[in-house]
Amino acid sequence: LIARAMGNSFPVPESLLDCASVQPYVHNCLVTLREGRHVYQFSVFFKRHCRLRTNPLLSSSDHIFRGDAVVMRIGVSAGSIVNMRGRDNSLADFIMHR
Image (cartoon, rainbow, N blue to C red):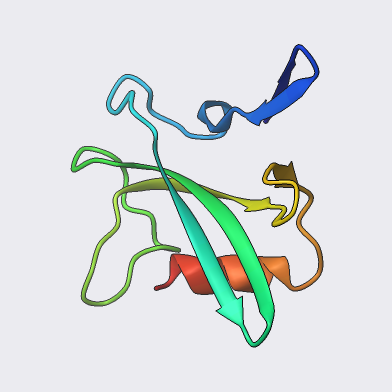
């Protein structure tokens, strides 16, 4: 999931996302979530294509999501990927269902 080169580490979400032959591109976006005086940053990597399988966890009754997603926590001060802690999982769920 994380590769290291010359002392730097960077995410490799392609290793977690399926169907490279159907959708070779991985999209990403940076999400900043503010809760009171706390700031949380996440990087969301995803594949979305009409020929990918329906993802029941990311779909709703009025919207079908076809593809996969990976959410990674970004440290606010360091700006790099950090381990997700206690509340981060529920915040990631909140982001994905928005």
